[in-house]
Image 1: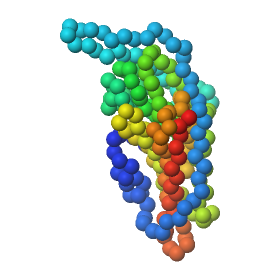
Image 2: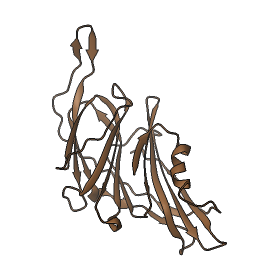
Image 3: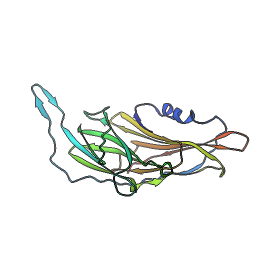
Image 4: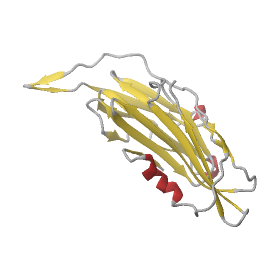
Length: 233
């Protein structure tokens, strides 16, 4: 499940805490993967503002998103969201989709947050979550979301016998005073993630992962993993 919203972090975390029983907390070690994997086509003709009588409409551009599964082919399942952070498209959210794996949407110029989930019909395969926190749309642009760039989220709780309950990866992006958030919550530990696109401005992106586990020590307890990671390029 993925979301893009203006909700504060505390509200989103209720999704996780509602899925586990309350108990003692312990910190686990976590490695948050992420490697730049940006694919943009050469620049095409730039748009310009168009006058309509006394009003001026913002320039719009075509954003084309190519989706590739771990085998380099069209993914079995995918869901992509593009949310405006600043500019004329601020607050606008689109979910372009096409069975061919290549989807396009026409949007006003500005800064956007793109996040995409790719998965198969096999639960053990897990989910690939790819996020581009900085997408500056100022021309017709093609982005490639490639599951082959992801790496597993590797969490090790203090108790090796602990059973995984649920986990979620969160990202918060701020630009020109506006903040957008995206997240993915999974009931299995088979989440893989990757960063897409250029680095964002220092301090503009926050990313963290929470996971919940049960152990037999002292009865039914809850182990919580919390990590804050900052990605600025």
